[in-house]
Length: 220
Length: 256
Image (tube, rainbow over the protein chains, first blue to last red):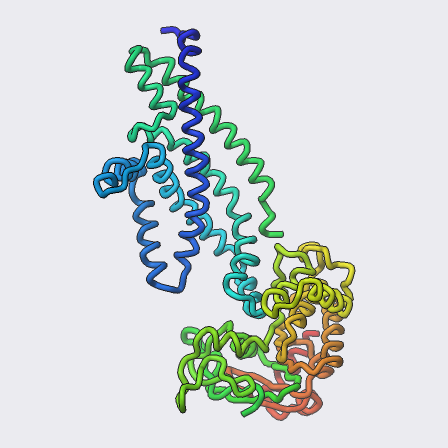
């Protein structure tokens, strides 16, 4: 069986449209994961039990269940409870929430890595609690977290094909639609895979640059 | 009640009794050095005054205000955070490990509290910070990051930073223990200056005995969570009364 280049070129625009959708899901989902993860991490450190306990339970629950089931829940079950999301919106919410539970652990480690003496000094200088976080703790904890956070952008991107389950038109979904018409799976699936590979390579290259930039900075 | 008043304060970490039913007072403006073997509770005293460590029992008061308690009628109840914050706002502390904020340049390390706690306008706080840097001999380092300074320089910045909050009580916790003797001397010179030019109340834990003799007007000897001797420095260092004090001073002086 030979790779048909003409066929491959014919379907490329469709697949690229799919790739654009995948990139949107990745970028928006990842930004949501970065923000929500920080919120989760801070909430779990709260001294108020009515904040830290439910958030802790929620995070463990999401982290302990498969993304695929969460996507099904968001797309098929939520509408029955009165909240209908478009496939892409459901996908972004699913990816964002799921990865927020991972990034929150990264932030947690970053926060715990700030030496206790920094907290002591903040008390000795009478800094208000909010100020301690925004000017002392997070500026040290976040740079420390960046290499690990970058890795999750790649992991998240590679989980985008799971959105096929909720009909988001990313490359894999597009490829399956093409196969349904042409009955020729070799090129669409190979091309979809190559597109994912290309983006993942770019992301990991960027990740390495970021890592080099921030390694050691936290200990400075 | 004394200006600083410890009343029947106890603290244990696990089975280890750090402070044992301890009561003592410090007068306003007094310079008190706490000496004694490690683990005898000296640092715990300072950390309690800074509210970094909570006593198991007893009361601590500063200028008639309880640090960990509030008066409600005739009763003492556990203090809310706002109360504790208010009382401790008169106290600051310099640490053995400097604890400068590595993400801020030297100048902002010093202005952070004046600007965001005292509400001093930024340019005013910066002018004052530069004065303080000059006092500790580091006016040229304002735009450096702490990691670009030596240990002795970092500690001098930490002293400037502490003075910037205009404390009534300055706690110095083994501020030269992490430094080479030569470097320690420049830090101690700065502190002698502070002692001479201000009337801040000082509590210091140190092993630098000559410095303790120079700046303090009272020395407390701690052993196993109790004060076993309380005397002016001349008496404490020249004719200690307690056998344990004599042994301790002998071992410390031999070390140096």
